[in-house]
Length: 227
Figure 1 (cartoon, rainbow, N blue to C red):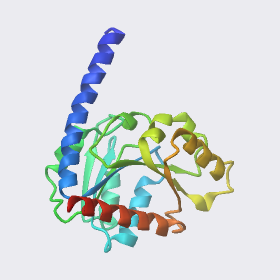
Figure 2 (figure 1 turned 135 degrees about the vertical axis):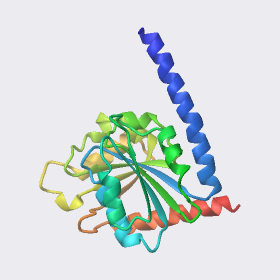
Figure 3 (figure 1 turned 180 degrees about the horizontal axis):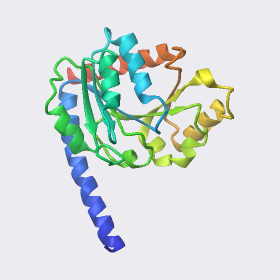
Figure 4 (figure 1 turned 45 degrees about the vertical axis):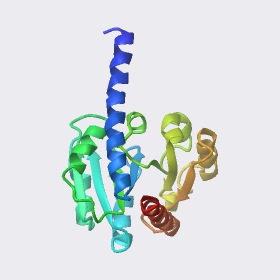
């Protein structure tokens, strides 16, 4: 296959994905549902953060969760045990990202009439998921203090296309060379509009600000629907 043929196929795939994502977005917007595409490298703490949200906010925020994984349903099972009222897995079978077709098939089977926030936990990867719109309102990129503070510079596409960056595991600051000021600077070099939260889903530090943002942003989405 020539390079030009490969590019044409990729453009066709992304074009179809964008069409399906648009349909998903329209349905979620009509329902006043805030949709977040949660992305990170493996091990940054996506599932742990969602478990903590369910524990702390389960009776304050009506959430539905879609958990993507390459080979198992382990994350979905963890979220269900943590109290998730609507949790569905997507096993990609080796694919390094979710796409709109996968998400759409799951959402067709869900009753979201009582849902305020839909969180799509993407496959642990900061490369492929950046190109795929899932019908979300925004991407939320999660990094941790156990990673390099140059992560935004290494994966600029993901940070450029995200609206929020969460820095997790701040309870471990000082145990490595990770510089929280440097990572903020690197991220804002890529995307000056990034909203940044610093927290620990283990100790709870910083979670109140994140929860307040979730509640406020979900309320704005519902308000926009009713206009």
